[in-house]
Image 1 (cartoon, helix red, strand yellow):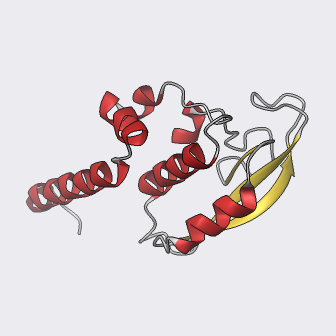
Image 2 (cartoon, rainbow, N blue to C red; image 1 turned 45 degrees about the horizontal axis):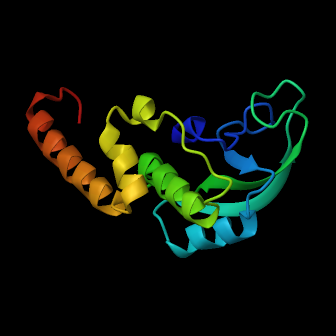
Length: 146
């Protein structure tokens, strides 16, 4: 999950790890509304507040302003693109608070950081979708079960 490479909590130390993200400074209502306005397939977003445990790695023992992910259609949901688009949005809304760590380790390439910081993330995501379609087409004849 790409949120691990940021200073956003990915929900570890809560009742819903990896189903919500948050930080004390997050404008969660604005983020949830902006993400819902994108009408991304298979997902909706809800502004929430949630406590972390004293042992949480990020923001231990604090109540965080967060955004909860609710998957509405597993088949159409695109978690990678959704997470990256949200990171990009939060980075633009919170330039003084948001920190992007070693995202290259999660994404496998420096191109991801360059796309986020350079404002070309949508183009990179479209390229990845094309690459995925090409791969699926090439692998189709080799699948035993369809």
